[in-house]
Image (cartoon, rainbow, N blue to C red; front, side):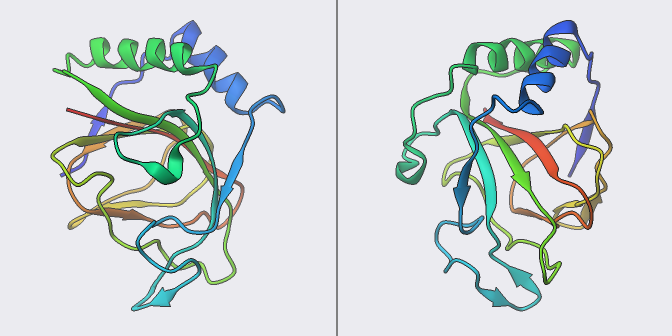
Length: 174
């Protein structure tokens, strides 16, 4: 089930978002959204397409994402904490945080269904750009709205945008 949260859009959020859209953020390229599936694979109406990413906090056991945490991780924690408090969420631990940037793809097929970790966790997505690229969790489908925040658990996938860049901040937590 997808739940929409309140975004307090604080000064810290606006400054962090400005950095995400600046020329100062270092982006890294990954050839596929799912580590365990062949890069570029198309099967059963899904595609393992590439994307740009910026790791803020590496997740436990994510060897492929062993890049040191970003110099902006403290600012990201402040933003996340403001959102957690504004929505009265009970969060014990943050496992991973990152910024993902997906461009339109040639085939316009959704990513493969997946879970982010092999242990119980929740996902938070903050839609930072004004584009499309739905998120699907089970039977729930959510169309992005700039600055909107959703949380969910379990298997999910997303569609690439048909225009612009789908930039999201992703956090996993328990």
